[in-house]
Image 1 (cartoon, helix red, strand yellow):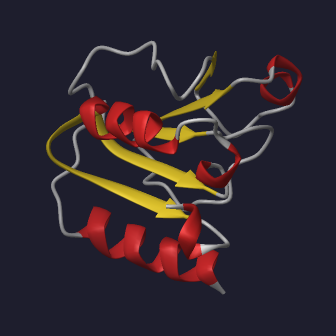
Image 2 (cartoon, helix red, strand yellow; image 1 turned 135 degrees about the vertical axis):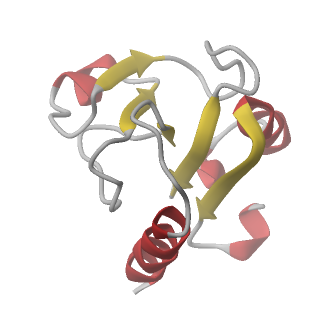
Length: 120
C-alpha cells in the first residue's frame, strides 16, 4: 500500500515536469530490484552496500556499491532520491539523511519510506 502511494506520487511529480534525458534518480539501498515507477528517460542509479545484491539488479542503469553515510556522488547531482525500508537499518540515520539531501539538486525530491515512524 505504501509503495503504491509512493509510485502514485512519483508519477504525478514526474509528469508535471519537463524531464531531460539525463534526469538522475538515486535509489538509495536499491539492492537487487527496483519497486518504483520511474520515467522512461531517466537514469536510475541503484546504490547498495552489498555487491551481491547489485549484481542481480537488472532494473538500474548503473549500480554503485557504497555506503549511505558517505555517498560517492558529487553534491547536488541527483534530481530525485528514493529510499525505502533502509533508514531503520543504518548506524547513523541522520548522517545518511544529510548525505541524501546533499545529493539533491535544488528543487529535487526525496521520498523516504520506513516501516516504523520512530526510525526517523
